[in-house]
Amino acid sequence: MNLPANFPLKKVMITVVSVVIVIALIITGVTVAVNGKAANATVDVEQVSNISTQYWGDQSSTYGNATSDFVQELYPDKEKAISKIFVKEGDTVKIGDTLLQYDTTKLQLKVESKELEEKKKKYELEQAEKELTKLQNTAPYVEPVIPEPEPEPTPTPVPESQAKLYTEITEHSKPFKGAGTEEDPYVFLCTEDAVLTKGFLLKLLGVTDPRATPTPTPTPTPTPSAEPTAQPSEVPTAAPQPTVTPEPTAEPTTAPTEAPTPAPIEPTEAPAVSGMAWFKQMTFTKTNETGGESVPTPEPDFTLPDGPFVARFEVHEQDNENLPLVKGWQMDGDKISAGFFNEVISEPDDIQMPDLSNADPGISYDTGGSMYTAEELQQMIADKKQQIQDLKLNVKQAAHDLEKAKLDLENATIKSTVNGVVKSLTDLDTAMSTSSPFLVVSGGDGFYITASLNESLLGKVHVGDTVMASSWENGQMYEAEIVQISDFPNDNSNYYYDGSSNPNSSTYQFTARIADADGLKNGMGLDITLKAASDNASNAIYLFKAYIRSDDGGKYVLKVGDDNRVHKTYIKTGKTIYNQYLEIKSDTLTEEDYVAFPYGTSAIDGAKANDMEENTDENDGIDARGLDA
Image 1 (cartoon, rainbow, N blue to C red):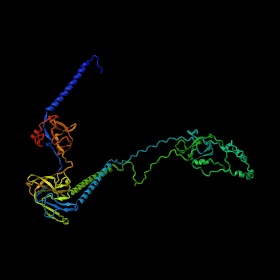
Image 2 (cartoon, rainbow, N blue to C red; image 1 turned 180 degrees about the vertical axis):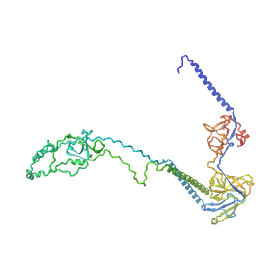
Image 3 (tube, helix red, strand yellow; image 1 turned 60 degrees about the vertical axis):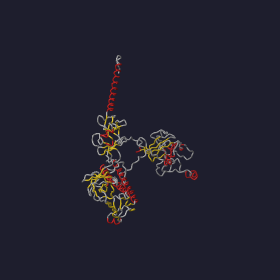
Image 4 (spheres, rainbow, N blue to C red; image 1 turned 90 degrees about the vertical axis):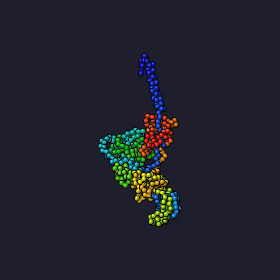
């Protein structure tokens, strides 16, 4: 922008500087105000341990009955071999005393067998999933669209042949093109069985025909090439010139002289189609029917020049030089190649693909695409998905069988679960035949709970775990320790389905001992809560979700720092439990830390935390929202 010469530039600079100063003062004022507000603001804080919980696994409910006379019974097991029994009938035992020991060798083999079975089921599942993926990525077969036949193009007229077709090439044959050089050879249109005469070959090689030189032989032998005229009237007058009468008298004297002269060879069959035929032809001399030499022919219109020169012989389709070449060969009078006898195919036939229209139906030919229709693929995919579901159940069953085999191995040593007396001890065969226990321990002190658990909890609930029981009659809560879990499923279970397990699965009886049984009666019904250990159970902190806030940087809490002020601290979170607690996965927060409720006018970064010890004493058990923790 061009400014006038008298434009007050100084005023413009003053205005710009003033605006900048005003903006800087506003920013400074806002910053000071915010920092002053944060410095003067106070916020209540809570210790993390008061507003968090821990997760130890899922809970499952069942019910059972209290009994004061618990009996421990051991039944024979065909799959287990007893290696040693440590008690005898009448012995007094306490909880934890060893009763007998099973042979671990057979149990270990069973575990290994179950491991192999589980691997097999997993492999079958993996293969089925791969096959499903392959089916889902397979394009269905689409019937090819047969295009409309294109109209046959109007044939281009082929010019008529202007070259003369030769079956015998002589020194008087006229090429249809060429100059006889290596770059531009004479080109002759010929048939496949065409032959070359001696006269042509002599011209090609540049050799003078010896018949053109007169001989001193007294016998007047007319030379066909030297005959100047071809008038028919001269033929009868020339015939008597070789006098036949003196020949008989001369035969005895001239026979030895004429004997070495070979008689002309008359070809008995058509020349073969090869260069060899042409080569042989140049030694032939045509004879007339009477056995004499051929009659001189009239003077030709064209005679090839004396060589040497280069000639090419071509065979075309329909004997037309304007159509494609079928074969051709070339001869150079200066250097005849030894391979000129071989036919040269200049334009080989196209390679033909095999016709599969009449192929054997038993042979599979790869057509480059799928042979299944869309409907067939959909059905195959549905069947494969069902197979995968069945295989997943098989994998779960195999894992369950393996877990049970491992438990049998771990529990190979059987211990007493009651304080009592060995009431009976019989041999295994008798117990097996009568389906009765072979070892019975009767206890008479304390109360026990007998209930059932779902098979899905096997391996998650163990001997020694604690369960909680509540009485229907007195409303009291009791703590009990599991002392026994049966190895055999129940025939009739008193386990009821609470929505957390499969109601169609088997159940196993367990026994728990109540240490403090005040108010219990024999046969009293109890609701029992089991805590099943979970793979995800850990010592992670699950913080109340109200104390977690998020912005563009992620989720954060207002954590008290070393300066006794709260600061925005970003955290990593995991799963939610009980719909109100969020897992804290980062190490930036511990149960000993203090955090502020991140909402409200005083919940700002840098606000001073109220005295934490005083806050803890005054709000013991109360969270920042005024609710019971």
